[in-house]
Image (cartoon, rainbow over all chains, first blue to last red; front, side):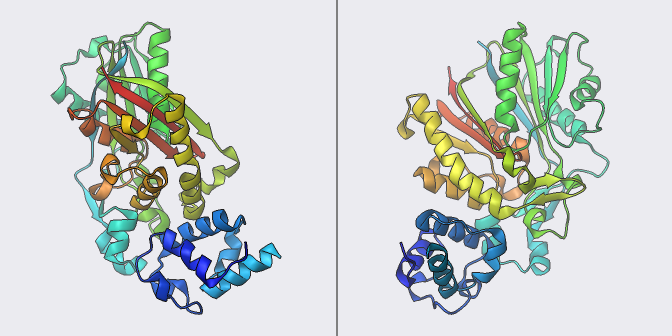
Length: 78
Length: 305
């Protein structure tokens, strides 16, 4: 399954984060949109489970925004 | 039948507030209260060791239960912060409590899964050796190994101890145990000089492994969620307890969260809650589940007779 803004936002929603996920901007860092350090590890886990990928710790620094996540997942799957 | 007769605990009076660390670690109140779930941590006196906390838990047990110390024939201490490398802390507790020379004593080196392992061990050992009155202590004073510059651990852990009194007329009987280990990830929670924790790895482990492990335990026991009154989970953090509960699809009211005012007390977290829950007339069957260092996990179903 390819990553899109919609299905990545669905994953973030599943993590029960505070804030309005539907209106999150895809090019702004998640940390600036109410996602804290515990939420983000849950988001990574849910991304791994949803898209059947592995996100090594060393790659997490490049996953700041929803756009970063979409590109990362689609590059892994291709 | 051997079972839990009584539990007593000890939490130090001294508290360190996480609200005082807001500036240092750039924290919001919501993070302290709803994510970490620790407003303040219990901290022992610097010169106190694991055995001292055990003795204080035992003193609290003596206030609740009439116990003849000369009849205690088994004494186990669960700790990974023993008083010394040699000897075992259980021997030191034995000496401080002036227990009988016929009393068997040994330590169990486990962290957050240690209470469940300890409960299985003490009952099996007492059964095999025809013993009658056992003390299972948990005491893991992490304040000695915390790196106070490390946000991952400095906000989380508190000191505490417990003692579980096992007798032949105990009222809470373990019905089934289940255990597991993932030693390939032992480095994710490690102490050489100071404690190191890979928070992401530990979270992923608990969120993926523990709900399935508990579901398998229930299936093996031919029980369903409706048959369980409470799930007493190791209090890793509020976020971890909430995540396991959501993945288990269990009502929030069935999963106590209790660590706001003392922190994650490692192997003592389950007995601290169990002490309260076992005296509630509404509870007849409980799941207890511990998980952490190792990576190691263990769960049990205990029933009131």
